[in-house]
Length: 105
Image (cartoon, rainbow, N blue to C red):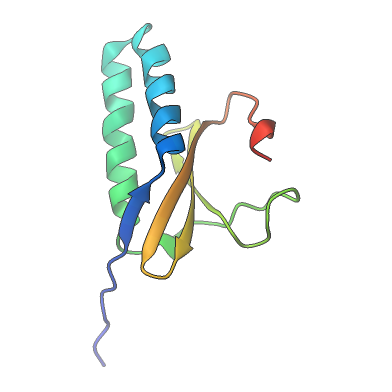
């Protein structure tokens, strides 16, 4: 039996891009290297979703639609929040978990 390798298309929303840019600008004031590392980790993590986006847990938050979003932890404090639709993965949010992101809910 052959295992088919399904590749997903990754689509980064404008909102997620803006959130990443805002966070890296802030981080660059402290450490340009840390900001660059975050960008590289974001790219690698988003790319990793091409192969098996279902591997990450669902975002289990009562205020969000059930089973709509999944989450991928970057480093120790950031999340990519994404959804899978057909052959595409939509990265909708980039969130620093140390900040209050209840507005998202």
